[in-house]
Image 1 (cartoon, rainbow, N blue to C red):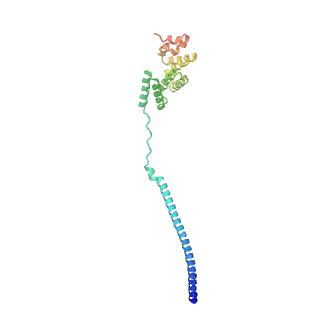
Image 2 (cartoon, rainbow, N blue to C red; image 1 turned 30 degrees about the vertical axis):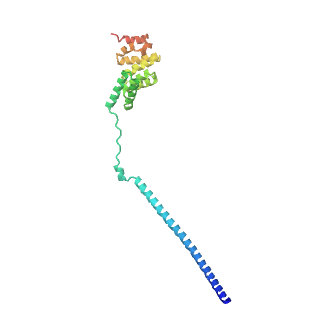
Length: 220
């Protein structure tokens, strides 16, 4: 029995040694296998990243190419026509509407259209003068004077702005200047005498010999 027992014990010991040796081999192989698997995943991830970067670069270049028109495409782009300027007839129509508004007492509308006339035709003498008259009624004498003086520079033989300047200076009690402009207006148009006799803006001139002499000559 002891011999058999010893034999079994030895066999068990040999089996334990073999199992231990195989266990070590399997463990080492397992570690190698896991190590090899991690590297594979890293390479796969790197390849995916490179593919993504290549795709992103291609997409960006393609977008820039689409954004930049070619010379041939530029040739097909036609310039937009410039907005049409108002014709002379349009200016006349605006000016006449302004005059109608003024006659009907619609000063705000008349003023707006006179300004529109001057925006299109800055040297329109009638609009300059008539807008100046509205400024007088609004007591904006400086703006009125600027308009009349500009009208005179543009057309020195135009009587209305001289007469209107005479009215402004009479209202402001600058009687000598008023008489000077009135005299010039009378020299351009004798009918100014008739205007001066009844114009309330010139009431401060009445009784002055020079004024009375000018208006008297106009009587029949």
